[in-house]
Length: 269
Image (cartoon, rainbow, N blue to C red):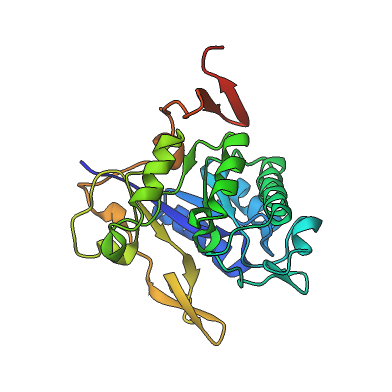
């Protein structure tokens, strides 16, 4: 029986999508969510998760592309920030300077620590616009995950039209000792087809103009648009596991350490 994890991205981004993610949990449509530490609705979303009982299903949605940064150093990096906000203009093909790398490291660390300070265990990591897979920000993001004891990291998209492109990145994750699903896909990648074992499906729960719970794929005049949020649990032939369950049995990291919540320790100790 194939195992599937369904993650609702962007928790805390705004009120509308955060309430949609809570509704998706209540309906059983998702197993996990990942949270933007700099989201406009961060504090309210934490309270909502605590009220509805899914604080233990939240990971970090690392972010260098939207909203207001948490740290001063990255605000001084024009490749990432304009007028105090992330600008989505970073050229991912250009290496980071030493100052930019240090600033990105400080920002991603602060984002993770903000979730922890709010009482969130941070069960796994992925990122806004997939920046944890970009050539020159990926090493920094994975360093933060390792230092913060984040065991599970989203794989690179490797189903559908991206079946080959993500394999090198995913092999690197395994070599570094991170736990990840074997496959990562958008809902559209597996629509109408068989679902391979160990697959994470990414969705963006939101409400459209008519109040319908959707998987947001865009916006028109600021209003979310997309297809109805899929309910994969309707298939009795799929077994669902959260990221905490996916990461419960971990490989050793490449440097001989084992990951624990909140840090690393030598495997011989």
